[in-house]
Length: 392
Image 1 (cartoon, rainbow, N blue to C red):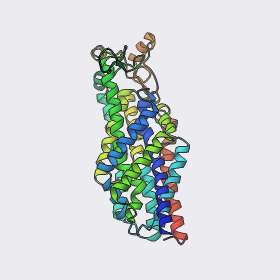
Image 2: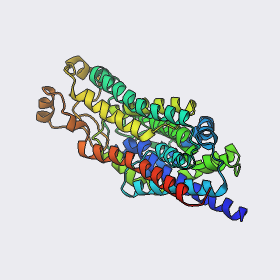
Image 3: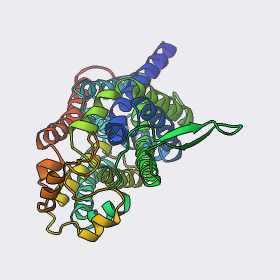
Image 4: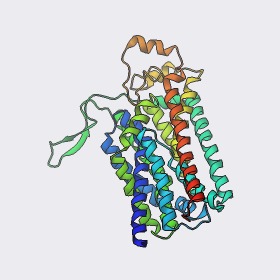
């Protein structure tokens, strides 16, 4: 019977990691995929490698918090299976509708439901986690908002590039050994900018692994079924499986539907959200990665929309790319191209872009709503089961 429960626990943990991969890959690589910088296959491969790295290097602190500190109830094999089941089902529902749900909030909610039902919840740690959940999106919003309002023109001058036709790199067979070189239309500036976008996506994948691998395996570590690092390796592999399969819809949502996101803006959002998540993970706090990233997008859009200063002529001339304005329609965007219509670009010089040009309010509201509903489902379901059924 014990062997059966152990095997079932592994299956459910893989199911949870599978759904985490489906959810987190869209957040990490949606901008790069939406801008045609990466294929979905390449994004999935990078997500697998860097999420595992984040789990191994930073994730153990979060595993410890969820697996042994949050509740005093011992994680028996059966309890672990039930908790993981609720986490997996809630995340699966979010992936079905193509919304990247907060895996950390869902995992904490399911474990908190167990603690509430058995009156063994560590209320001090829970209060600390919830406090960071409230503070971190606000920090992400305002940091991104300040960048969008006061520093975005400078960042455009430094980083903005147009995307050329054809391959970024090609193989040169003129020598004895084939070696890569820039494509026919690729500039050095475009190559460096593309490398930055991909690198930031890898950084996001790293921070997602640091925070989210624990959500799949913490109960199994807590009950002693698996040691820390084998469990993290299992979670990382399961995340990779989700990245290669069901992540396509969430990559479309983040990369194309949520916002017409310029590549420079994608760099800002990724840097801000990944830094906050990695910091919290190092403290052992399971961070709400997708909500932080979403609020960073909204904050950057708000900051750009409320700017009172305009991009100066010197900035426009300094960039090798024809960046005439900060309007999302005219800068290289995630899911779009740079406008080459002179009249449209000339008109955009006179106007600061509206918020609706920078993020889609309807989709944003739907994403934020579902990101809070999914953890609530896991919490209520876990509480009801552990309160009224003789499982523990």
